[in-house]
Image (cartoon, rainbow, N blue to C red; front, side):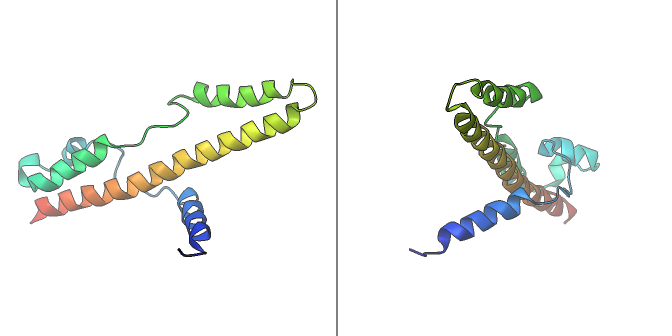
Length: 130
């Protein structure tokens, strides 16, 4: 076992968390991307298209929910925990730290998925250009 593995994993996590969002394609299903590029689905490699569609279907969902309200509720719970006598500050800090880690994990999962999805879409587009 590599003794530096945890630090490497954290470094990769931090790099993905801080990745600039410079995406080549819109976050759309493969058929919509091909339509927006005026490409015909019948011109591309079927296997590459199926792989891209599979990648689209495995898009990660948010751990906290899809709306801003879900995130606000999680933060509100942290503030309500401050009302607990004696241990409220500690409990609220732990809660808010945990929520920060959950949000960071969501960001990293989505960034990693986007890299894989864009690679798949690029292969689909290249297969149609031949």
